[in-house]
Length: 131
Image (cartoon, rainbow, N blue to C red; front, side):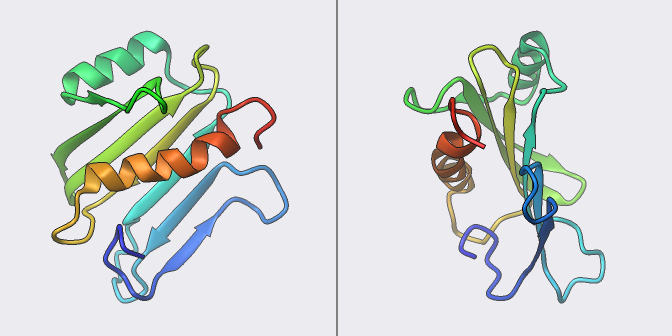
């Protein structure tokens, strides 16, 4: 998987056949089994528009491209190293998609990777008739 830099990985998540809520990608060679990629769909979102705007400001977020908004991406140094994430949500903020890449493959544009995940998943999870 290009975004994580792993050739072999384990993925776990939502129950097969049920509604999608999350997916975690981990390195099978790493005993801590911390997620290197996390995709989460919240319906309903636990964050209000004010909380999303505050998070964006705090993390110096950058708006998603116009065709993908509303949403933003941000990068910061976390406990597990550098982290990049993207939040996208419906105009009414009822549903939210979160993509976390920690730390990401060396030499890649992690913000661009997070945006591409939103580009692929938004039509499935955040548009009417999706999910």
